[in-house]
Length: 76
Image 1 (cartoon, rainbow, N blue to C red):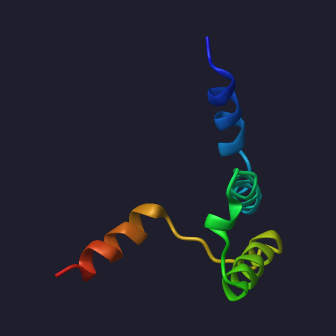
Image 2 (tube, one colour):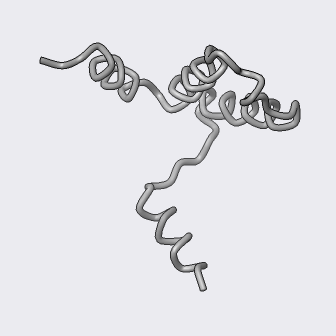
């Protein structure tokens, strides 16, 4: 039998990427000490801009394998 957390995690992972990002942000802010996770306003604006781009369908996506391959290729 799945635990409540496993069920919630499974449901959350089915959300669209922008919705998952928003949920993750809200969960972090719900912690006892959200001040430890406060982001500069410039970062908050960038997150909002990127989330909006995803919601509007304007964001370009790439396969994770391709992203990780690019990162590995740049390693010394």
